[in-house]
Length: 326
View 1 (cartoon, rainbow, N blue to C red):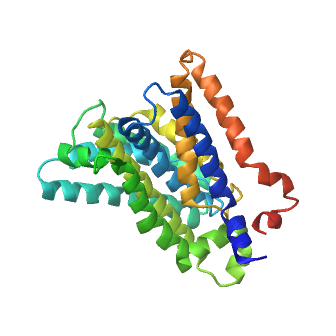
View 2 (tube, one colour):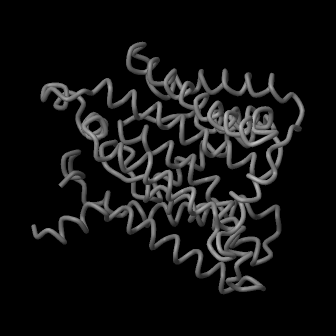
């Protein structure tokens, strides 16, 4: 197989996620009353970024052949924590941001420890920890409230040079600083190997435990980035169970839309970003078509099911597990 064909095969899921997003976004913009303006792009980017951070977090766990049902609750917990800490002068604000990100990493590390050393199934462990994280969020914010550094919030949810949404720059920074170093490191390769065949990876002497632990810890970090951005976007903190559960479920849909294999061992956080933006656009499309709100959840599910099916067409050729990695 030539080099370009190999690259194309490797990036097939990501490219499919990009194609689905571009198709949906084109339909959305073509029917939007204002068309593609800077304000419309900024709003779409900010809403999509909230999905994208959680989808990236889910991706890291899914590539290890696991699933994290607590990412939405880490997202909510760090949103509530940020509404207490990311306030005041620049120095306290910076320390608050660091504290929130560290809290997310600690939550992810706890998930990893329970799965790796506690030998619990990921779905069971993260259901339990998700309930704990939501309980902590309720303790912090029994009622919606709090605040955030408004100058920082405006800068990170606004536009650079009056054109480029700052949220897209934040996502690019997360890819460059978190995803790419992890993907290219020995520990990252071990996480991918654990997802494709943990026994074979172990027999090959790869640091499986460290790889999986890093994946869960960084997943917590990315979910915390999403929680921070939600605080910047809303200027408040709220322990909303429906929001946490919704973001968790949509993160799984975004992962599939972005071409990440739920079998583990294959996929990209970049594809998950495109999947998240595609998932977010389904709701926006129904809004511009002026669909009755009572029908929107049903139609949104139908559109999403069609998109996920298109993104999963490659599974039709899989005869056994190894075929997926060829």
